[in-house]
Image (tube, rainbow, N blue to C red; front, side, top):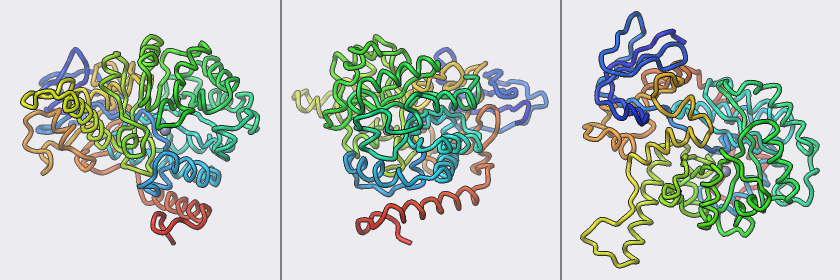
Length: 464
Ligand SMILES: [Zn+2]
């Protein structure tokens, strides 16, 4: 980490509501924090990065990803959610060794940093043994990414862990001892680069006493909850928020992942209880969860974050998610206008904008991750999590509206420089971390897991 760093002369999209968008500004970083933002700041011995003509944004936030699945990337392009459950969770997950979790988390985190994602919420429901948890955390830590380790539960049997009759199916978490150990061993402070939340199953997925146990455990540990809700046409994901209300378990800061099929009453409950939503739009429309109802969430003034969810089925970067939600939510509104027979010579009402989309991918995601006090915007005093996007690239230039350039034109190949906690982790298009070892590890993990999976359907799994 250099002590002082000056990013000179960029087009700065701060996402800070006070500072706004600055066409030509410098960012001064001291140690791990943003010291100042404005034109013509004094370099005063700082290392200078010339960003003239480039676009500077806060690091992207991925608000929900099962990073352990990076080992089996794109094994399931054509899956719907129901086939995903049966194959990924029931046939792959039980075979995961701690080494596989480490390799996947390390590789997935490097993928994030390369793509300008500086904060990752790792929704880790691969806690098959205590060592799996340790290796998941180590895989995040070695890369230097900011992350929220969402401690989950074992995935040794779909029947036991999602729909099982009994919470005591595992020695691991039946009394919360493992969650307490993880918290005490790794997360005594909530100010570190990695913090902890609880990834839970929730109503419909397990018995009510299990739900109550998990929610009370999160409260005891002083950590936030993230839970999948209201997805696909599954009966057991319907009315989960209402069920939580009936159990008096609507906690502020809870992240409701997907939420494609909330009732109006449930939207109101999420808002009143101070909850937020994480949408994985590419996955949701591709696998059948439902739409990513950002227009509705916005109407209820509920914080929105974007997420990549599963690498088994789609690209895991925020450009993909921004494109997916921009297209799908506008598509929904255009269809509604068509169905209402509104005059085609006027724009459809209620269309989302590129600025909203960039907000969700950055500061909105930080709110969802529960760490907007330290990241998500370029704000003096916040942690220096900064991304520089190449404004001169063949797919980005010429720039007219820099927000549109990021949301509609740029992709991962344009992520030039990435800074996390004041540390340059990607410099001039190259990750600083060596890739050969981590790649070898994740490929070996793939080979092992594919072999364990057994005879695949022809054509959809890599063969040796
Ligand atoms: Zn998920």
